[in-house]
Image (cartoon, rainbow, N blue to C red; front, side, top):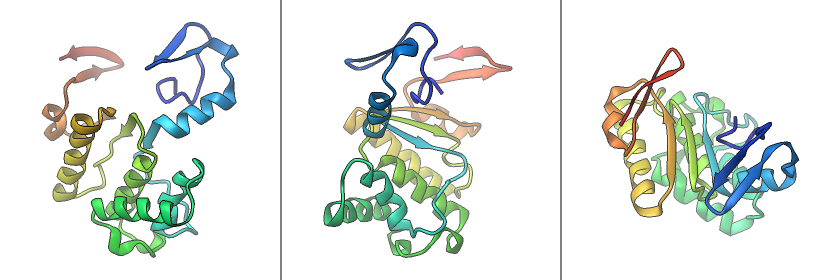
Amino acid sequence: MLTGLLDVPTSGEIYFGEDTFSGPDTDLDSLRDFRRTHVGFVFQKPNLIPFLNAMQNVQVALAVRGWRGLRAATRASSLLDRFGVGHRANNRPAQLSGGEQQRIAIARALANGPKLILADEPTASLDTENSGQVMQIFRELVDRDSVSICMVTHDPRWFDRFDRLVELNDGRIVQDR
């Protein structure tokens, strides 16, 4: 909760680049605005809005930043294509497979060009090919765009894909490399 700035510390400070968030006096509006601009969330469940189609689900993330019309549609379309679901842009979540829903949710998380992506088992519902594609895109974001990704996974295929691996066992760090 603290990492994604969904909660504020009761004491101490959180540093994010040049920004500092300090204890209970943190302004919640500025925290919300910062999250909208700098943090992308990928959950185990896609959490798509059921009455919106795939394109609209991605555009929602852009709307909170003031992106509308052609600009938002172009960005959303580009992301859907990048994740191989552009042909499903007009489908609602109930018409999509679990893997398609997850790729749309990942596209939504990337819509605002966040500098931090928090991903909880982002490939759990994806097949091998699409899992590899998502991990390749994540790696490109790290290398090309200096995005930080904090990802939780139980899939050992991805352990060597990133610069740092912290292994937990029963809530304790057992390895940090």
